Amino acid sequence: MLLLLIFNISSLFAQGQAFTKHPVTKEEYANAVENCDKSILRIDCGKLVQAVQNAWPELKIRDKYDLADYIRSLVEIPGPVGPAKFSRVYKNGTVDFNWTRDIKEGEILLFDNNRAEFKFSLSCGNMIFGVPVSDVFKKSEEKKGEKKSENTFLPSNIYELKILIESINIGKEEEKSSLPLMESEFSFWHSPWPYVIGGGIIATIIYLLIPQRDNEVRISLSDGGILPPN
Image (cartoon, rainbow, N blue to C red):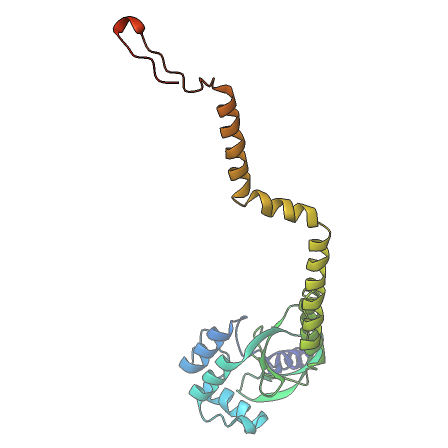
């Protein structure tokens, strides 16, 4: 019984742990690495740098400052749900890369765009390996397709643009030819001729209504006036 208890305690202390004590953001993780913040990190900064150097020598990470800058350059993306391999740290500071678990729904991973690889999980700070990126690119293509379908009225090339312009011009010509009378009347009433004709009619009416006297000349004979010669 005592041996079994000792074995269980030893197994408990031998279990690997997460690099961070709680989930972090990308900037929190970078700052913790840069400052060796033990309130966030379970792993020593030097051990973490060494683990990254061993796993990804092509990154050429020299120190904690390089690693912090690299973390800041990564992109935060929800990971695809499914099994993946993670690193873990033991109480004695040893790091291995043989812990397999499922990525949780909505778990945020750090993605290297240049290498098309997931590198870290922000839920635990651990390094991550073998995550398929096909689902990520598939979702990205689906989003592009949705945006393209929303703009299907726009031409995709010069030939389609030419057809679109010609169809618009044809539609305008048909609309113009369907209303010739309306356009001619519109242009007539916006010319000066209606005012000239109207003014002439009004002047004629006024002239006809005023009584005419045929140039009569009234001369009073009693005043000694002289009759004009015939």
